Image (cartoon, rainbow, N blue to C red; front, side, top):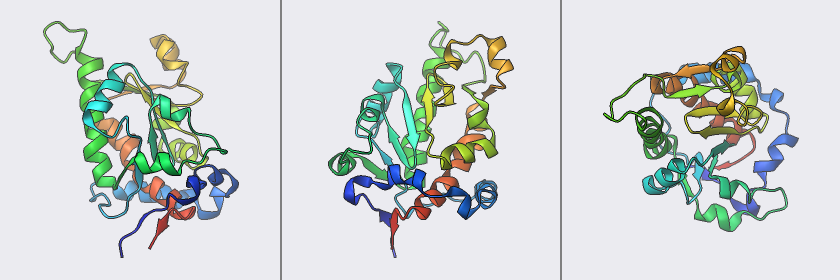
Length: 223
C-alpha cells in the first residue's frame, strides 16, 4: 500500500524529533543502510522529501542559487532562506507544507539534486572563465561534519540542518566560517574539495536511507 508524508497538525514532528531518542534505533544500522544504498534503485513510492515552492521548479532553484541563496535540508524538508525564517515550534505549517512539492527519493534526485549540481557546476566553476570552459574538477567544498559518513549521520539525526550554498556543503556551525576562510584554514579544519560524483557518493546517497529511517521513526509515513 502506498505510503505518504503526514503533514497534519502543522508538521509538528519536524521539531518533536529532538524529544525522541535517536540512539534507540541504532546509528550503526543506518550507516549500514547508507552503504547498501550505493548502486541500488532509489525509493520511488514514498514521498520522503518536501521542497519549498521557491525551490521546487528548475527556474526558481536557478534564480535562488544564482542570487547566492542558501538552501537548508532538515528532516526531509528543503527550504530557501525566506522559508527558513518561517520555521518555529509555534508556527502552524499546515498551509505552507501544502504549498511544497512532495517528492520521492527518485523525484528528489532527478528533480532537485541533479538540477542543483548542474547549476552549481555552471555558476561556481565556469562563470569566471571567459571561454566558459571547466577549469577545475572540484565543484563542492564540504566541512567534515557533512562529508564524513559517521558525522553526517549524527548531524542529521540530531535535527541539525545541512546547508548548500555557493558550492559549499556545511553544517550550521561551519556555514559562516568556510566561505570566508582561506584555503589554508579550510585545510586545517579538515574541509574537503569534492567533485559532483564524490558529493553524490559521500553526502547525497548516504542521506537517503538516513532520512527514510528518521521519518519512519517519527511516524511521518502512513500505510
